[in-house]
Image 1: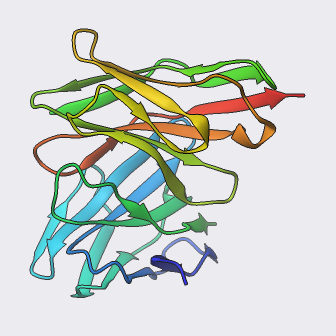
Image 2: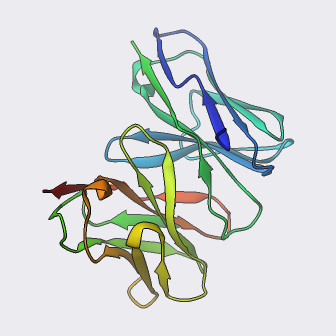
Length: 113
Length: 112
C-alpha cells in the first residue's frame, strides 16, 4: 500500500459545485501539505498543517479550505469550483525536521467544466 | 524568503550522453535542497537531497548534484542518460519555515 493515498485520482466537476479531495498517510508524520501543479509553474503550496490543531495558508489559498480530521487525514475542499482550479493536486507529508524529504501521493487530476 | 529558479524548461539529450539540469536558489537561511523526479502520470519521487553535509550528493539511478554556496546553485547531473530518465525534474528548497518551494520544472527528453 502507498504511504500517501489520495482519493479520487481523477474527477470532473461542474462550475459552482463543492468538491472534496481526500488524503491519508501511513507514515506517522505530523506535517501534511496540499500542493497544486500547473504546467510551467511547478508545485505551489495551497495549505499546510503542522499538527491537527495547526493549519496555515500557503501561497494560493483563495478558493480553498482544508480540514485535518486526524494526524493521518488531511482534506482539501473547493467550496465553489471554477475552471481555473483545473489542475493536478498533490498531498504530501514530512516529519518535523527541516532536512526531511516530503512523501507525495499519486495526485488527483481535477477538471472543472 | 526562499525561491528556486530552474534555468531550463526543457532539455533534450541522446541516450548515453550526459545530462545537466541547472538550478539556482535563494534563501535567507542555510537551506536544504532536493531534486524530485516525476514520471508521466506518477507522483513525485526523491532523487537526492543536500542537508549541509557533503557538497557532492549522490542519488538514485546514477544522478548526483553539487551544492555550490558561492554560486547559489544545485545542479543535477548524470553521466549517461537512459530512456527511462525521460521525465520532469523539480529542484526544491526548504529553509527555516519547513515549507518546500518548488522550481517550475525541467522536462527531459531522451532521444534514441
